[in-house]
Image 1 (cartoon, rainbow, N blue to C red):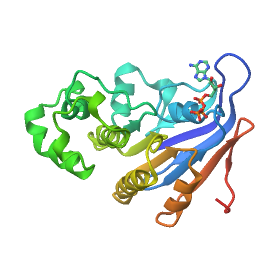
Image 2 (image 1 turned 180 degrees about the horizontal axis):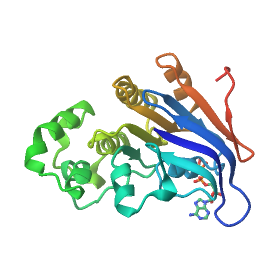
Image 3 (image 1 turned 90 degrees about the horizontal axis):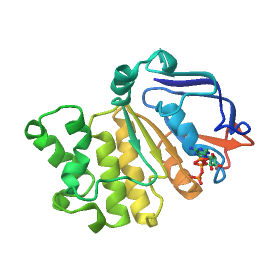
Length: 225
Ligand SMILES: Nc1ncnc2c1ncn2[C@@H]1O[C@H](COP(=O)(O)OP(=O)(O)OP(=O)(O)O)[C@@H](O)[C@H]1O
């Protein structure tokens, strides 16, 4: 569904990423790890089309990223749910409206989607928080709300940047469980994380490949992880 072939990326200085190849197939589960500043967020952005490769080829759903115009790109992006590192909510909007924002933006009638929204908020354990404003939420609630918003359009691929940052172990296990559930429904999942304990916990539950950025290159991590 998403393929990077021999991709390189530079923000203008030297190469941040070089000769990166990766393929996210339906039902696949990948972790992406590497030191701070090694380019994990950048690689995720290349995967969801927020950045164009400096070299090489990025293909989303069989279409070369460079061949897409803005409208086509917007359609492709609906098939990818992204959980951003900083969650990014609109602070003046109640939580349910924040989670439903991708539906609103794409022209859905919210009244028709009320059942789905309720179900989704129950699934992430936020059923009682419909009217809460984002600044009132705990770190774990924010992370779960960000996940709910990422999946509300039923995307084929879920890309999450440090989805368990700033939460305790129990909450990170809960978030991991939700991501594994989505994967078992056939979604491709790609998670960037520093948390090696999380990766180990996941590997006992799901067949996950662990990719590591090291010296600008992407490598398959050893079985020791
Ligand atoms: N828009 C930008 N313009 C210029 N440099 C950038 C930009 N975004 C990121 N960088 C630089 O690229 C490098 C990699 O950043 P990136 O966020 O991809 O790393 P990361 O591995 O996700 O880091 P972390 O684990 O700390 O979140 C960093 O040195 C960062 O300062």
